[in-house]
Amino acid sequence: MHYDHLLVRYGELTLKGTNRKMFVNQLKDNVKRALIPLQGYHVKGKRDRMYVDMDQDADMNEIIHRLTKVYGIKSISPVIKTDKTEEAIYEAAIQLARDFDEGSTFKIDVKRVDKSFHLDTYALQREVGGAILKNVEGVSVNVKQPDHEVRVEIRLDAVYIFEKIIQGSGGLPVGTGGKTLLMLSGGIDSPVAGMEVMKRGVTIEAIHFHSPPFTSEKAKDKVIELTRILSERVGPIKLHIVPFTELQKQINKVVHPRYTMTSTRRMMMRVSDALVHKIGANAIVNGENLGQVASQTLKSMYAINHVTSTPVLRPLLTLDKEDIIKKARDIGTYETSIQPFEDCCTIFTPKNPVTEPDFDKVEKYEGVFNFDDMVQTAVDNIETMTIDQNYKSEKEQSTDALIEDLF
Ligand code: ATP
Ligand code: MG
Image (tube, rainbow, N blue to C red; front, side):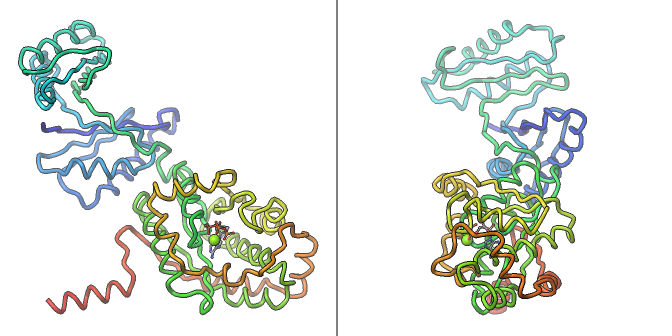
């Protein structure tokens, strides 16, 4: 069976009234980017749905697979597009039914958007069903529990005939909801948090705090790989690596051991806040989850949050860990996240961090040193890289070059 088009149904964006054009254009851009470097297709974004025309040699399954990852798409159907004549409709329906297994059952489902079409819904249902029964052997009608539903949509421009409806990722097109800064550690939670906001149309840049030599290059590579996985769905992502060693050392010098964790988080928040303004973002996102660890009690969050007035989004705040893990598996970050490289916090984590930090005390400990310059230096020395789905580290690139030289 050769399908010549994919019908792409929008998710919630149909609700967005006057913004619809902007949403459709953004989704079209995102779809086109997701399909690079595939060949043999053409994307047409209409007001109420999108079509992907496919040549004979287009890889339909791969195109569908990629579309299921694009936010803003509710579902996808491979369709046959025909003229608005009875003969063309019957012919396409027969073609479709020829793929049904011997002994299987079907029903016809007609949607008549063009009310002026000369046959009404009921007559069309009967005629299309009759045409299949006459021309395809070994199939029969069952309207209650059919194995196949042959769907016929009579629209203004043409008739679309299809069977399958493949679930998309839902959500809103990335790029329609402003920009946030994701605090990305190497753990399980923060990549999921990033994906949750992107699902609502928001663009992210990522910030990672790196403390060499206490944290290894491998920890950094892990964060790069996590960013790469996220970029598979949403296109290139900027990753900002913050040199955090000096700040961590200074915190450990002046802050009471039980409060170093709280202060570390506060400094991360201060650096993030400065970067938010620099890149023109509107919020910070992190993977915090209520009660999960010492730094994530309400009192902790209060003390940490106090250094910024920028909204801090915590999409995972109330989820259970097992649900977060399930989401991490779904988006493909879990296996990378569980690799054992230490991040900067684990290494400096005190044995017995305070779970209910007293806000006044944190301020008092930090008050003995002016952290402003150090925070600014960290911001000024951020290393920024742009990661896309094909990103290769310098190491991998040089290995590739060596292999190419050999052969
Ligand atoms: P995750 O699995 O995301 O690491 P976690 O459960 O280990 O989360 P914490 O280590 O307490 O929790 O970190 C809480 C949040 O702080 C993280 O979800 C992340 O958003 C941010 N964070 C922690 N460490 C870093 C880091 N080195 N760089 C950037 N953000 C960080
Ligand atoms: Mg962590």
